[in-house]
Image (cartoon, rainbow, N blue to C red):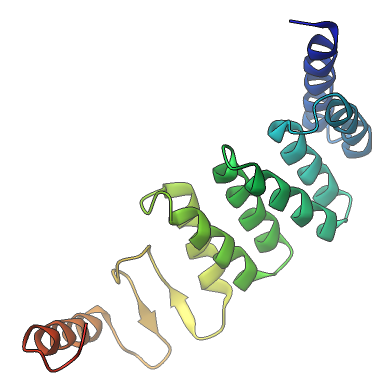
Length: 166
Protein backbone atom coordinates (compact mmCIF):
# COMPACT_ATOMS: atom_id res chain seq x y z
CA UNK A 1 0.00 0.00 0.00
CA UNK A 2 1.50 3.34 -0.99
CA UNK A 3 1.50 6.53 1.07
CA UNK A 4 -1.45 8.14 -0.76
CA UNK A 5 -3.67 5.12 -0.06
CA UNK A 6 -2.72 5.22 3.63
CA UNK A 7 -3.39 8.96 3.77
CA UNK A 8 -6.75 8.47 2.06
CA UNK A 9 -7.74 5.74 4.54
CA UNK A 10 -6.76 7.94 7.49
CA UNK A 11 -8.69 10.90 6.10
CA UNK A 12 -11.72 8.68 5.45
CA UNK A 13 -11.60 7.41 9.04
CA UNK A 14 -11.29 10.93 10.44
CA UNK A 15 -14.20 12.12 8.32
CA UNK A 16 -16.36 9.22 9.48
CA UNK A 17 -15.54 9.99 13.11
CA UNK A 18 -16.47 13.65 12.60
CA UNK A 19 -19.77 12.58 11.03
CA UNK A 20 -20.60 10.55 14.13
CA UNK A 21 -20.09 13.77 16.12
CA UNK A 22 -22.34 15.74 13.72
CA UNK A 23 -19.44 17.92 12.53
CA UNK A 24 -20.61 17.93 8.92
CA UNK A 25 -18.39 20.71 7.53
CA UNK A 26 -15.19 19.31 9.04
CA UNK A 27 -16.08 15.80 7.90
CA UNK A 28 -16.77 17.09 4.37
CA UNK A 29 -13.24 18.51 4.19
CA UNK A 30 -11.76 15.10 4.98
CA UNK A 31 -13.91 13.41 2.33
CA UNK A 32 -12.89 16.04 -0.22
CA UNK A 33 -9.25 15.26 0.59
CA UNK A 34 -9.91 11.56 0.04
CA UNK A 35 -11.49 12.33 -3.34
CA UNK A 36 -8.45 14.40 -4.35
CA UNK A 37 -6.30 11.31 -3.78
CA UNK A 38 -8.84 8.72 -4.97
CA UNK A 39 -11.46 10.34 -7.25
CA UNK A 40 -13.48 7.12 -7.61
CA UNK A 41 -13.75 6.34 -3.89
CA UNK A 42 -17.48 5.67 -3.64
CA UNK A 43 -17.51 5.54 0.18
CA UNK A 44 -16.04 9.05 0.47
CA UNK A 45 -18.42 10.28 -2.22
CA UNK A 46 -21.48 8.94 -0.37
CA UNK A 47 -20.26 10.34 2.94
CA UNK A 48 -19.70 13.70 1.27
CA UNK A 49 -23.26 13.45 -0.10
CA UNK A 50 -24.59 12.97 3.41
CA UNK A 51 -22.55 15.92 4.69
CA UNK A 52 -23.92 18.04 1.84
CA UNK A 53 -27.44 17.03 2.72
CA UNK A 54 -26.95 17.81 6.40
CA UNK A 55 -25.55 21.26 5.59
CA UNK A 56 -28.48 22.03 3.30
CA UNK A 57 -26.93 21.51 -0.13
CA UNK A 58 -29.54 19.15 -1.54
CA UNK A 59 -28.56 19.50 -5.19
CA UNK A 60 -24.90 18.67 -4.52
CA UNK A 61 -25.94 15.65 -2.45
CA UNK A 62 -28.01 14.31 -5.35
CA UNK A 63 -25.17 14.95 -7.83
CA UNK A 64 -22.77 13.01 -5.61
CA UNK A 65 -25.22 10.09 -5.38
CA UNK A 66 -25.51 10.12 -9.17
CA UNK A 67 -21.71 9.93 -9.41
CA UNK A 68 -21.68 6.81 -7.24
CA UNK A 69 -24.46 5.29 -9.34
CA UNK A 70 -22.37 5.98 -12.44
CA UNK A 71 -19.40 4.09 -10.90
CA UNK A 72 -21.44 0.92 -11.33
CA UNK A 73 -19.94 -1.36 -8.72
CA UNK A 74 -21.40 0.62 -5.80
CA UNK A 75 -24.59 1.79 -7.53
CA UNK A 76 -26.72 -0.03 -4.95
CA UNK A 77 -25.47 2.27 -2.19
CA UNK A 78 -25.95 5.30 -4.43
CA UNK A 79 -29.59 4.42 -5.05
CA UNK A 80 -30.23 3.94 -1.33
CA UNK A 81 -28.58 7.22 -0.36
CA UNK A 82 -30.31 9.13 -3.17
CA UNK A 83 -33.72 7.72 -2.23
CA UNK A 84 -33.19 8.61 1.44
CA UNK A 85 -32.00 12.13 0.64
CA UNK A 86 -34.98 12.71 -1.66
CA UNK A 87 -37.35 11.43 1.01
CA UNK A 88 -35.92 13.73 3.67
CA UNK A 89 -36.24 16.71 1.31
CA UNK A 90 -39.86 15.88 0.45
CA UNK A 91 -39.00 14.83 -3.12
CA UNK A 92 -41.05 11.66 -2.84
CA UNK A 93 -41.42 10.90 -6.55
CA UNK A 94 -37.67 11.25 -7.09
CA UNK A 95 -37.00 9.05 -4.07
CA UNK A 96 -39.39 6.42 -5.35
CA UNK A 97 -37.72 6.52 -8.78
CA UNK A 98 -34.29 6.02 -7.20
CA UNK A 99 -35.60 3.10 -5.14
CA UNK A 100 -37.25 1.59 -8.23
CA UNK A 101 -33.98 1.87 -10.17
CA UNK A 102 -32.15 0.07 -7.38
CA UNK A 103 -34.84 -2.59 -7.21
CA UNK A 104 -34.19 -3.52 -10.85
CA UNK A 105 -31.02 -5.28 -9.65
CA UNK A 106 -32.61 -6.88 -6.59
CA UNK A 107 -36.42 -6.71 -6.50
CA UNK A 108 -36.52 -8.09 -2.95
CA UNK A 109 -34.06 -5.69 -1.29
CA UNK A 110 -35.70 -4.79 2.01
CA UNK A 111 -34.05 -1.42 2.48
CA UNK A 112 -35.04 -0.17 -0.98
CA UNK A 113 -38.56 -1.58 -0.56
CA UNK A 114 -38.85 0.24 2.76
CA UNK A 115 -37.74 3.56 1.28
CA UNK A 116 -40.08 3.06 -1.68
CA UNK A 117 -42.97 2.39 0.68
CA UNK A 118 -42.14 5.50 2.73
CA UNK A 119 -42.07 7.66 -0.39
CA UNK A 120 -45.32 6.22 -1.70
CA UNK A 121 -47.01 6.82 1.65
CA UNK A 122 -46.34 10.55 1.23
CA UNK A 123 -47.72 10.80 -2.30
CA UNK A 124 -51.35 11.99 -2.24
CA UNK A 125 -53.90 9.33 -3.08
CA UNK A 126 -51.82 6.37 -1.92
CA UNK A 127 -52.12 5.27 1.68
CA UNK A 128 -49.77 2.31 1.73
CA UNK A 129 -47.95 -0.08 -0.54
CA UNK A 130 -45.72 -2.97 0.42
CA UNK A 131 -43.36 -3.80 -2.39
CA UNK A 132 -43.89 -4.88 -5.95
CA UNK A 133 -46.76 -7.21 -5.07
CA UNK A 134 -50.15 -5.68 -4.37
CA UNK A 135 -50.34 -6.87 -0.77
CA UNK A 136 -51.43 -4.09 1.55
CA UNK A 137 -52.70 -1.64 -1.07
CA UNK A 138 -55.58 0.50 -0.04
CA UNK A 139 -56.82 3.64 -1.73
CA UNK A 140 -58.81 6.59 -0.57
CA UNK A 141 -61.70 5.30 -2.68
CA UNK A 142 -62.00 2.28 -0.42
CA UNK A 143 -60.65 -0.43 -2.70
CA UNK A 144 -59.15 -3.22 -0.66
CA UNK A 145 -56.83 -6.07 -1.55
CA UNK A 146 -59.75 -8.26 -2.61
CA UNK A 147 -60.71 -5.73 -5.27
CA UNK A 148 -57.14 -5.58 -6.58
CA UNK A 149 -56.83 -9.37 -6.64
CA UNK A 150 -60.07 -9.61 -8.60
CA UNK A 151 -58.84 -7.03 -11.12
CA UNK A 152 -55.55 -8.92 -11.54
CA UNK A 153 -57.28 -12.29 -11.88
CA UNK A 154 -59.65 -10.88 -14.48
CA UNK A 155 -56.72 -9.48 -16.44
CA UNK A 156 -54.87 -12.82 -16.26
CA UNK A 157 -57.96 -14.64 -17.47
CA UNK A 158 -58.38 -12.23 -20.39
CA UNK A 159 -54.72 -12.62 -21.34
CA UNK A 160 -54.87 -16.42 -21.19
CA UNK A 161 -57.95 -16.42 -23.41
CA UNK A 162 -56.09 -14.33 -25.96
CA UNK A 163 -58.41 -11.33 -25.60
CA UNK A 164 -55.55 -9.04 -24.55
CA UNK A 165 -52.27 -9.11 -26.46
CA UNK A 166 -49.22 -9.79 -24.30
